[in-house]
Length: 420
Image (cartoon, rainbow, N blue to C red; front, side):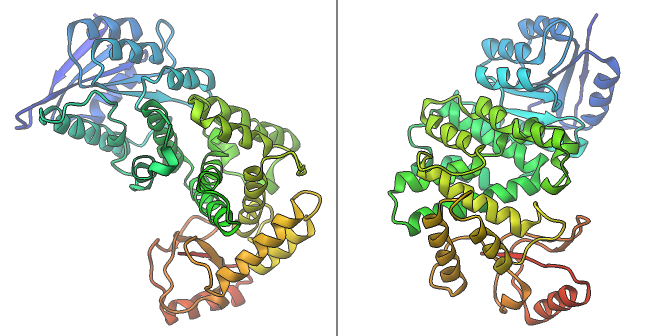
């Protein structure tokens, strides 16, 4: 037999049924150990064909399948799981090399979430438990029946922001299908988990681009487009290797620069699934260009300025982050060739007004000399070695500011904080 079953009884009245699929026995044994002690009934299937046979005989609450298997791939297993039980939760284990298969799975719309290889056991268990808990809650609420994918459950160890963005902002998601919202939510959660620095960068870009569009008195629809472009312009980096994603841009070789540029096409394949997102996809494609043209969409020209500025102050182009004033000087130097000169002038004016407190509502970068007690961190302050000095939402005191000033002057380090 290519299947195993282990019932786990821990006093839970309702033991939900979970199917784990992989073509390697050692991995199945490892996953069985990982889920040992959880209030579920765990079945394992050795390969895709065996999994489909089990799907025909059992009603599974959740199916967790490896992507690459020699007989039937994971995407097909989850497709069949959907055919049998549309309300089930379906999760895919995948590596960064599974580009085509991942895109196929997303296009099919039958996947609620991805587990990245190599996975963290605690996070894996947390995700599965959260998904099953929400599924159980939905099934025990007969007055509110729903057959929508349980995408919102796959965020047990993630902050609420991706969910709030997709489900709490109707102006941003208007016209996007339920399936499209689910795909975008899943991609954002994957980005937040696997590439937290890129996630933070795209969040800052999106918020600043929207604020800039508002400053220019652009229609609300264009403000929304600016936000979505900034949010998703780098989503294709999910398909790049971890080694490549860990590097800053100044560390790329020429060959690596070409590989990184592929993320635009990969992102197009990931998010270009809904007709309402075509405008966003087209604008993102224009970001590949080296210099601006008057034919570029205004939303693209806005985001190109914001992206460049944020990369300067976050240390993507040089070994040390640029201080905000230096970053603005460097931006001005590229005005008229790389960036739209009129937009650059307006952006710099807006940033000055943000510094003066005339404009509020967006995350802004501040050096220690510009800090005042009572300011709150929009993002954690992290050292180059990855150590968290101050967590997000820290309210700064004068003692903290004095310490940051000491670090900057005595260690010759540029310290940039993001304040909300």
